[in-house]
Every structure is written in C-alpha cells, then in structure tokens.
Image 1 (cartoon, rainbow, N blue to C red):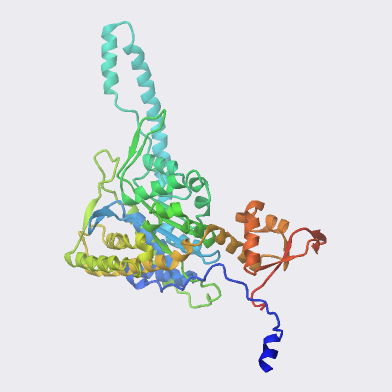
Image 2 (cartoon, rainbow, N blue to C red):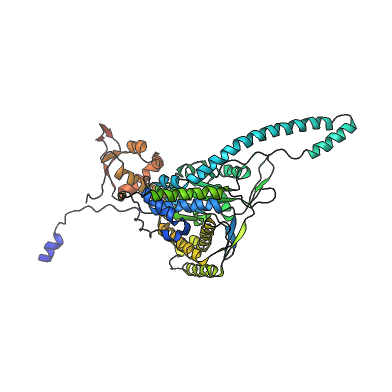
Length: 501
C-alpha cells in the first residue's frame, strides 16, 4: 500500500540549472618571474607599478629584449642554430593594464625611433637631391650615347657605365610595425631595418583586419612562420622583378582580449600551419578587484628607466651584415657543454610526455618545439646581459627551461579552448553579453542584432545561437506578441540569470 502511494505520488517539477557551454579554464601556474634573469627586476617593477598580472609585463619584456638582440646571433639548439626571435601572444581582458605595461617597457624603442627619424629627415633630403642629379646626368649621357657622333657616343656610353647604380633611399626609421599586411611587412624589410618587431598592445586591428581575413589568413600565418624560422622570403609578381628578402629577423608580441584571440586559438587553419606552436602564449588570471596595494617606490621608476636606456643602447649597436649591408650575418651563440646536457634532459622528458595518454599528447605541436623555445629564450637572456657573450651558461639554460615549461603548461591548459566548436564559442560570447551587458531581463532579436556583440549581428549567425542558448537553459522563449519596450515582439526571450535556481 505504502509502496503504491509512493509510486503514484506527484513529484513537483523543478527546473534544472542551465548547462554550461564551455567548461571554465583551469587556473594556470604562477609565472616564474625569478627565471627571467636580467629581466626579473624590471618585470617586477612594472608589475608593482601597474598591478597587472606579472605575465603581461614578462611577455612585453621578453619581446622587447628579443627585438633588441635577435640580429646579432643565432643560438645553438640540439639540431642546428635558430634565430633569437620570439612570437608571443598575451590574452587578457580589457582593463588588465596591458597597454600600461607595454608603454612602460616600450619607451626605449619609441625614443630610438624618434632618434632615427631625426637622422632620416636629413638623409632623405640628401637622397632626393642626389637622385635628381643622377637622373639628370643619366638623361644627358643617354642622349649623347645615341647621338650621331660615334666618338661622342662612345665616350658618353663609357661615362654612363661608370655612373653607377641609382642612389638608394635611406633606411626607413622604424623598428616596429603594428598592423601590417604580409606585403607591407615584406616592404618594411626591403627598405627598412633588417631586424623588426611586430608589437601591438591591441591586436584586434591586425587579427580582425585585412591581413587575417578569409582570403589572406592562410598566406599571412604561413609567411610569419617563415620569418620565425629565419629562412628567406622570395616574391615573384607579374610586372615586377623577382625579389628575395633574406637575412632578416622578426619578433612578435600580440596582446588582445579573449574574444579576439579565442577564435584564433580554435582556428584549424592557424593551428594546422604550425603558427600557434611557434608562439609563447600566456593567459594570466585577472587581477581586477585586487589591485589595492600601496607603497609605490621611486626605485621602480629607476628600474624601468635603466631598462629603456639599455634598449636604446642595444638598438643603436651595429648589427653584423654582409659587405653590402643588405642582409644580416649573425654569429653562432653556442651552448656550454653543461647547458647542452641540460637541454637534452628537458627534450627527453617532453618527448616522452608526448606518447599516447601522457601529459603532452594533446599538445604535441607545442611540445615538439619546447626545447627550441628554451634555447631561444636562453640566447636572448644571454645577449641582453652581454652582446659579446660566446656561449649560454647552464644557469641561464635552467632558467630558460623553467620558462619554456611554463609556456608549455599554458598551451596544455588553453588547448581545450582551441577544441571548442566555433558556433559554441559564439554562443558563449552571446551568453556572456546577455548576462553582463544587456539592459533588460527580456530581450528580442532586433535588440540583440542592434546592440549585441559584433560577431553575432546578422540574423543567419544569430538564429542558431539563440537555439543553443534556449536548449541549454540560458534563454526561455516568450509567447509571440510579448510586449517589450512598448511594442509587441514576434520573437522574444527571458534571460536566465545566474543564481535563479
């Protein structure tokens, strides 16, 4: 009897909690700032001044240091030598003081570019005058060389051959570029310095711009990967003479919000081309809401000033080039015997970790480059401390391996984001916007199309996203004709807020 009563009892309905679209990313390890060697003090000072995540300042400092020294030497690895260049990606929300860190650490670069511009103004004026003189002489000699008097023609031809090549413009006074196309970067290397940095504290313009649109993305990431490898770039275009840019060095640091870099991490083409595996990626935990420390010290400013003075000095040093100064001829920075053994040990551990079921099996593209990344970092720290250093010490290599291990851990931690379906990513962006930015608890499609995230502002994209949020419990469809903002709406939803259940 009792069993039947229990069986026939009506159990009250209780709505389920909405389902999470994306699992929260695990918290990463603390950045090993003490492994930065000669960069530790300035990174600590910038972090204290800005109270930003320390990884943001560290990424900026490493990128600037790489820009300063990459033209001098290639560092020895376990398989040949590679450039002392770095590709860095920093993922942080708006308000994390990315620009503040970058501005403090880029001041020396900015000062050096201003100094270059002062010299360039006089050099370009002299060039234009010499070019006019050369063109006038050539025009006069050409007229004489095709004249009727054979003696005069022969003399003019001889003088014409001795005239030499046309005067070349001075080197462009830029050290960094921010939003170039691949062709623009190629031209910057053709007519500018042999060592450049693609550095931006707001990379949305580059990632969302012409260089990374549907038609150019594959070409751009492939081209950038070539610069990381240090090989030359050949270009053959209809109507132009073939050209070849070799002996160049490029370091990259792109900072952007998760909404910008997140899709890049999940892009199969970008990942498949090996671009991401060449990057040191950091996505530090937010410090917003905890930045209450006091006790600002003038010593922090002194550390930053000393860093930027060092940047200017290193950028001003002449880089090793061929006799025509058309390409770099970097020397080889060797590893000490102990440093090489230390790197071998690291390589062996990471290699075993890539076996099926092991720690790095799901990020083997990053893991396969971890030892090389460690060598690159070691080369940069060594040359920053001493541009004339002959070898990397074991102490520097141990520090660089700690840094490489951190970045490999970040790649492993963030890899789940790269495996998320693009439509789910967009749905999550819309969900977050509805939860935090929407002015109303009840919304209609027209409002979302007008006010929502840019990535969902067309009906074809939005419709399936609304279905996903409805099926997972984050939206509840309202009856047709529901009045919102004074008008009856054909398609409307109630937003389910966190903590309602």
